[in-house]
Length: 190
Image (tube, rainbow, N blue to C red; front, side):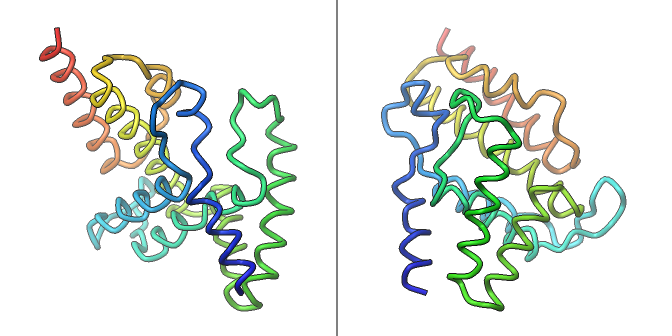
């Protein structure tokens, strides 16, 4: 258990590669990202439904958010700029998840691995919702960095990478609000 917790603790010191590559002065860690995603999932109204009409299990969404990037404590935050193929990235993360599952113990390890795999392969409405949250949290963070640095559209490529990829209506509303705030912020600084 101590080894598992120590490895997971590495996520507090693993800076998100995209922010580092863009010269953000104090980039968030992977655990910062996962934590806020879990909080965002917590905000999901209890009776929320997926695009398919299925009712989303909020607690399940929170759990997926808490483990979706956990393999990065071993493999690091691999970004497209690292030149690692999607297949190789998946292979490395799968091996890391297998190791983490063993360290976490039989019951918790099995659940952690299954949650990660559910997210990885987008097997459920909850996994799809959390993927939307993952993208939303990233652009929210980009907006915050742009605001802090007084650099409008500095991180536009993060917004561009998510355009048209949101499926859940609640997240689409959040994205619309964020885009409006971004436009308002640009007008105030012009």
